[in-house]
Image (cartoon, rainbow, N blue to C red):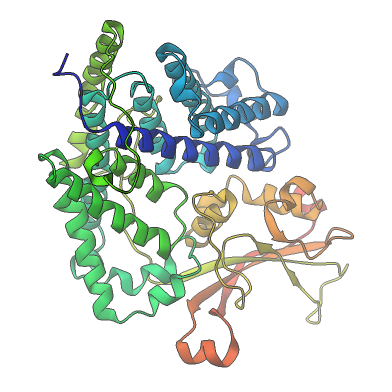
Length: 477
């Protein structure tokens, strides 16, 4: 079956699968570490309450069979274990049916989490991981030949990821068209990284070059993925370099790493000659496997109708799933770039009576800006879900309506699980009496300010986000 086999892609396929396993591992660890305060039985948005009104048809998940925090932890830890054994190559050495079963289990487990994760899991990279993970089920093992159909579907996914992001920018904010978006983006992005201050302080002419390069990478280069080699490999290489630039400039969970993993699958073995050992080619193509691959290819082609229609629409949706299984989605990011950065700063006090002299102590989050002297950290590909939602809350309180009051109540109780989501609790001995939240305008310091003060940020108070409240008041609401 020479027409089925993609010769010369054994290493690219292997690196794709190992990279995807690493991202699965991070995703499941993120679930293990954060689900109790966010989604657990006593969390901010309990899964058990969500399931009362959620149908399996609209939200397919194993948790419709049963939910408890122990059951969630067991499923998430199973995902961690399967991801780890896959990452070290054990899954690839299993017989083909067993290998496919492991990848299918990873997909089902993570789909089950995403579909009950509510706003904490409403990010485009969740669907991207699921769509990629579904295709990985059919990518074969070490004993099977690389299937052309699956490699082409991975390119089709990468094309939609990049081209969709490029279109949403050109159709969205005018700053993408006049090449000025990076005057603001490095400063106002959801979670700046250690180098974001330096990126922001680059000359503006370089910012314009960056935007122009982004347009080329997302609107022109993706078509090269379907050209013969070496053009397809060069196109993928350009995308990898661009994504590494984005990794260096900010924290976008595993979004950039997913694009890199997909792009690696495009690279032929000869691109790695002299650098990495090339696995021996295998020509095994069991008839049942061939039939399954082409059935999946037909399914993806049919489901592609909705993303294609969305791509050509002037009302293009960003990061949308057209089915509850998160198969063949549409992607995009930063159709609008905020010009000003606002942060919600949460503070507490032990004073029983509030006066102008009341001392307020500030809670510090792990990733989002707070202390102006604290340098932004590197967290991606790990996803700090609360920190990301706090960025959205600063844009509009409506993003926090479902969970913010519950979050404040947990802080007023000194809830241990919730406090583990934070970097610093200013009240380790006893909970605060009052908590308030204030909206601040943040901007990166200039080079002169940075030398003089040592601060990375300068901030100014904008107004009240939440007036001072105490636990008894929240309990009566």
